[in-house]
Image 1: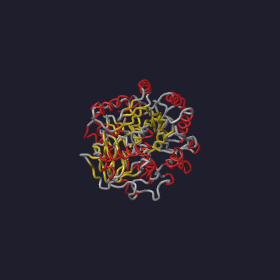
Image 2: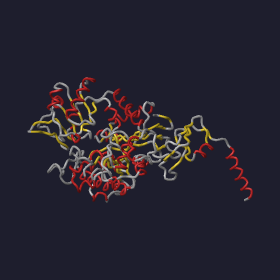
Image 3: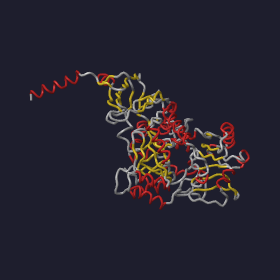
Image 4: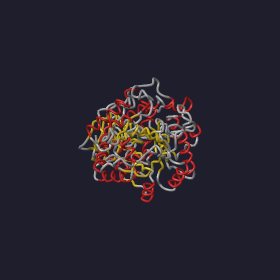
Length: 540
């Protein structure tokens, strides 16, 4: 025993006398929120080969590690690389090449922007996104007459902010061979006095989509690079793109492999029969940068365009329930098929009827399985009875800014009682233990700090309303940060490789100008990113 004791002491002395280990990067004197429950706070960390090697105090990190590349954070706050659990990354990039109609306060302003865009770009087919009739003085869907007079020979198709309604002119209707007699299930082609208004809701939008020219590959590449630049500037290092084609996914993969695109992506495959067949045969595709292991399905439309499927009629539209955009039988058959595969099923569900179908179907087909983490995207209006069937097979993927954008008119759609089960993020968290947070950009703004503010304060950027909208469903700052990091990673089956500043995980982190966990609440939206790091390398 005595011999063993002296050997042990000698080993300790030998180790303590060794030179500090050379690493690629040291970050010291920082205010680090690790989002690791085992060690929630730190002041320093070491990085080697693109991963966190050690996390702890500045003193111990400097004692054990050395480098030619060190960052003195000077007390700045550092958080893990942020994850947007539901966005349209590729769509955001394409939007940079289209007319931007976000923030328009009238139909006339929409028209002015389209005219200005056409004068500058002179494109063969005008497309754009972002109008919202709920923001106008006259809160009614527009009609195409003014578009027809301004653009008699150029097709125009501009999408509502939520992506669930479309306004087109007569030229586009003619090209698509659409008449007042055209019918499509799972949505609506709006008419007035028997004539087409030019507004399409949900599934019929595909008729117009079929005639819009596909972007060229160079335009696709530019879109992806533009979106990456925007996301890195906000500290986003992983994005969950909610619906892509195999062609775009393959392009992303190739750009990542050549180093032309670096952001990490969890890519949901759009629910198109050919796409489903392709990936069920191909199987899950996973690299350090790309995760293709899920399908994005639409159950219903959006609340703003009255396309969300409700159990009882809309409070502001007698007899109208919205609509499912997929048949119940078709949805259940797809769910059964995916339950027998390694893929996740991620379903857009807004209305309480759609959420009931999705949650009950998930519950039924996954009864003998565990930890499948099938996602309900939005879970926007949930009836009381559905909260009771939530379990570890289900992950709620929600977007806090939807609550603060919709609060001006959502009660009109839903009524005083039903609104209580809407945007109920705290209640969803209590039932499931985790919520994954995203933005749904470009429906909303890219900024994760707007997301953070909406989740915590339940206010919009005008600091309205006093006291917050349905504040009982606000999240704490700790819960919100987890929802944008480790819980979002969990929703992607990636919590062992990202989502916290933990030894062994990818060295993705963000240096903030302010302390997001302590700054005055109403200053949260104005927080700026000082630097973004991916694999320990500065990307912004």
